[in-house]
Image (cartoon, rainbow, N blue to C red; front, side, top):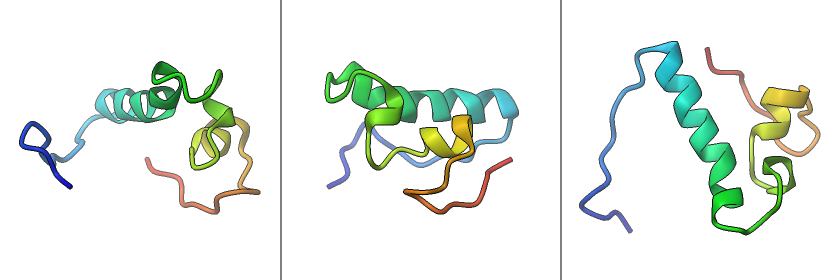
Length: 62
């Protein structure tokens, strides 16, 4: 499941947190699985950018 080039690390800054959120939200778009981040059913994009928790109930980070 885990590949050697991936490793866990702590996110200590707001800049890095936003970078990682952006990556996670845009990855399905980059892979051409959807046209927009909000179309990915398992994305937290709607929660963070539209304050919509109708599909995923979450706690806001940061």
